[in-house]
Image (cartoon, rainbow, N blue to C red; front, side, top):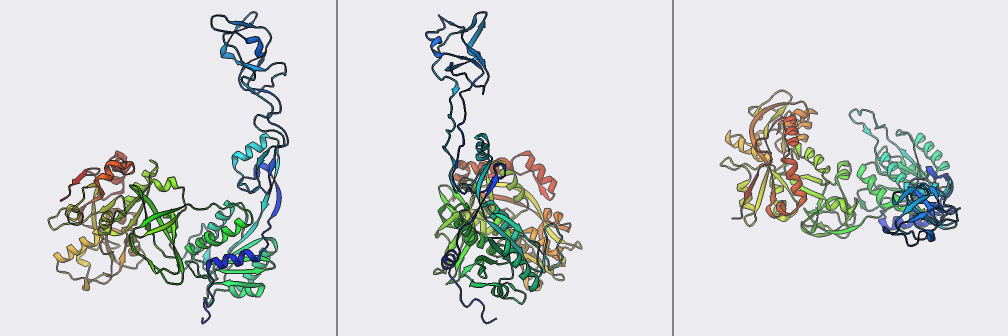
Length: 621
């Protein structure tokens, strides 16, 4: 393994090498217009005929000579004897030059009585009003949309020349199974090439997704040979690293020239760029976030050089909520969620694990930590590229604090109101500090005071100079979850799974342990932490632990036994001025106060709703 990435290439150099090595001349094919949606026009498209091809009536009525209507008024109506009845879309004979709507006429025995004169070409669509013969319909390099298809069909165009780029996607790995299968321990459902296929089709290329190839060098090589013979670009997923079953590099070298193996970016360092018979062959890392990074930073820009359409991402400046440490010498891409708090953008970093696909799902942007920088401190102004429409990002509401499964249900209901919630689980204390720094809109919390009250004392202590409000989500049951019905008294004899430091659940546990004179050192697994109630339950269900503390609704969701230890007040803290002036937060309150939300809580179980939706005001000290 001594040669592992000895010659890392910078991202910019890798892109330059890729661009300079290949002739970027896609094929041009002709397709029926109805089948052209999403494809890129190879050249300008011109109208073969004018449309309309004759003068058409724009209304139901009568075609007349405008001169015959002269001087018609309410007091002195004019009788029109020379006319022809027309409906919308009918040809208007050349001797007539105006159409009067039927509702503006009165039919009499001699013809039609009108009380208002008509002007020439009134309610007539002249020849070529929409488009004249020889006029451009679409430019070259245009992504064809449904409206373009409708227009071309209307103008008599039946076929269109489009750019044709055929991309082969080859997933590899003996542990990989097909979508729809149920994975056994050690197996993984293939998702990278499914994601790549969707991205590349969206750019206008034609995609062939090959069946999964196991870790057998001969079969991988045969599949690559087949793909190279019939495609313009070939992507191979997984096997690009230096493990004992990573065969991509030696196979690529046996078939052609590898000119890059390893790029100094994170994630996605093990990417391979090769040239086989003058065609690009790209080895993509197996981790989903790494695969997505290569798609965004290399593959899609590469396809755009072939003339395919790849949209850019607008750039904003945002305040970083949280610290980011990075390795010197490596460009690192970090997924974030951005939202506007008052008039300023805030970026919440998401989990940086290469296999954490939910970071991709939850993100609406990303930032880059340059190779020359060790990271960023909280509050640093950073440049973020937004990957969703800016209008949607502006409607994002940032929720940072304690986790509860009901937050996901709340988020789902809020989306129907045009609000896009994004939550990170940093614990009650983490949420309180986020509110203090101005890093979130709402901070869910359940911080128990010595006097038995929840949350108010902590807010007064940490935010004495702010007017705040607490929105009660519910009173909820906390308890010990297990398969066997264990209680708190069993905590020293069974493997435990804990919540993270600063979470309200952890603080409640420590409070209960102190009451019973139980030390953390006497508990097996006390140091192992999870960030959500559901993660605690999953660890117990999978056998990694025997017991933990979580809310009833989480235990119910996983079919675990639940022994209650108490009821707590779960509230969302918000700055009073934001509650008063931010319509997004007002929509959150509206949903929480709704009867449908209370019914949802009752359905989930473990919640009391008498206090749900009530707002407590906390004045500055």
